[in-house]
Image 1 (cartoon, rainbow, N blue to C red):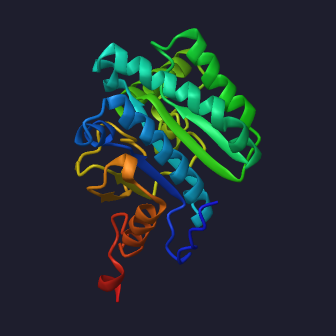
Image 2 (image 1 turned 45 degrees about the vertical axis):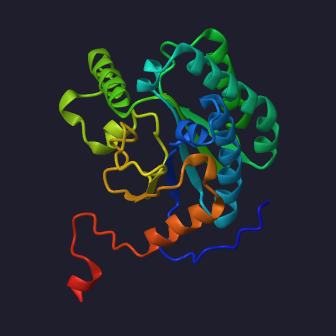
Length: 247
């Protein structure tokens, strides 16, 4: 464990989602290949997964590979997939022993049978764990997820399992990859970019956002704590009056 101190438990984000960005720029600044940045990014993943559980986060979602990332050079995509395999080989047993339940968000379309088998193994091995929830958004896009959910609902209508006009927000959410998970309270994006990049479009409707200039390989548990503390200063209204206005 990192020894990170507990943060004030009041107004604490149960679910944090992170857009991990800046590996390539981190490597370029050091005149190293992009793969080196991705390798260092994996180290940041380890730090943050362990640190998030330690400071009291219940659920963590990491954006690792988007549907748009297929536009990158084939060599880089292959290297990213190899890094995922390496991470699973080196960390899965430890995560399982620590009670981490891993869910893979995203489509399996376009993935090789061996990659699909790897993702299935990760989920199946940790499916009974309940101490910490780790979601990896892999081959994931928010628009794609919503389209897949809509198609699944339409298929159920055709089969007579549901009524078309019975659809509501709760029912539709059950068709999303995050079914059964709480919506993210806090979304963090690293590297100084200020956009959502097709990430959790439905689920992040009322999330608070924290943007940091820190590149992902440099992101630490201290940075995570600062983001949580910034979140704790927010007045989450969900369309209602704020506390000061009510007073």
